[in-house]
Image 1 (cartoon, helix red, strand yellow):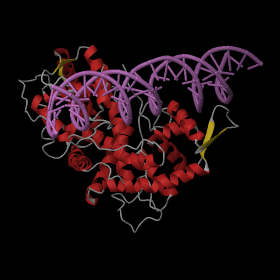
Image 2 (image 1 turned 180 degrees about the vertical axis):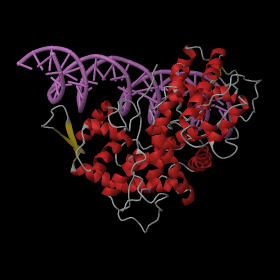
Image 3 (image 1 turned 180 degrees about the horizontal axis):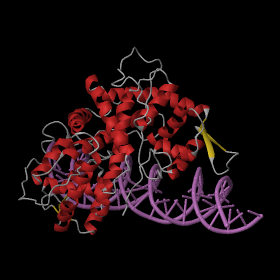
Length: 213
Length: 213
DNA sequence: CGGACATGTTTTACGAGTAAAAGACCTGGT
DNA sequence: ACCAGGTCTTTTACTCGTAAAACATGTCCG
């Protein structure tokens, strides 16, 4: 049980529990006289979202600032934080955390046994984390492991019947929940968003990580 | 130093160190009368990004699956993970983690003293986390605190000269880095992405969190 | 054959974040 | 005045993830 709740952003919300905000954005040294706009906090994001307000503040402090990257990266980070929080609700009811579900999901969707290493790559987490999660999921009877007779270094992990049932049971609630969360967006907006995000993600994944900058 | 590197996704990459993947996506048992339009490309986008592959697998297992939400949420989560990793590089060189930078940045961009509570709201983190970070940043001489004579429960936190210099020094590298990371995207795509993300984020922030689903 | 090196997984030590409780302080009603 | 209850912050106990080292095998090549 970890039932998350209460979204942040608001004014006097519990706040205790959200994840991340951006706020990253450089500018030229220059730094002029302090151009503080009392905007304070009484009035939340004048316009649309919290990132817009943050960007506005940075621009006031560093007038020459190119806020372009922030407008995208800050929003993606923030959306991810809120979406993950929202997403966790149905999973929580099933007694699963998202990383745990990701692991079970990888086994379910590939439909075959996977090694811990493959699971790590599949869920984008570290091998050590996978080891720990497998231990817990195994103790709960959701996954089983057996040694590979070929290569005794590796293990083969697979879903148990209960594990498969768990995934099959949670999945509908999960997707329904995601749909509900996105329902505010018009179908048109959703349609435009997908190819753009795919493009961005493709670039991010296709490149040698950080160019070492 | 925390110089992250090696993107995952690949085939036999180090992988050890990335953050998160989606993989979450339910389906209505029988897929209601075709609601979602496949959004864009007619083909299941097989080769572009890792999310596309995940979606393909889910569809194979649950043929009626409505992958719409996954295509957006999965990609946002994944983009956020990769972007954050990439973003950390310049900060790491300055000896800062992103949460630490977010805190310093909040002080810098608001241009005034903030209380721990305000900082927590501003950086979307818990009060306890702010307390810890302030302790560290204070020990490093980047922030100062003084009690508020009016209300002795609250503290007033502000940047020291060194703290301000740190932010001003890191900011340019940070933004340059972000620009470089996004450079793969055409200006047009970036232009389209911003309003869409703003729209989505506005919805997410404006609503009562998860409708309790 | 045998050891050097590569590979797959687990263990260890530790840092960071959270929830909940505790502590310190205001405030409004009687 | 006093205290019940609210607000702001810190403390406590705990979980989780990571990096790096430790293990346990495999593989290659002299």
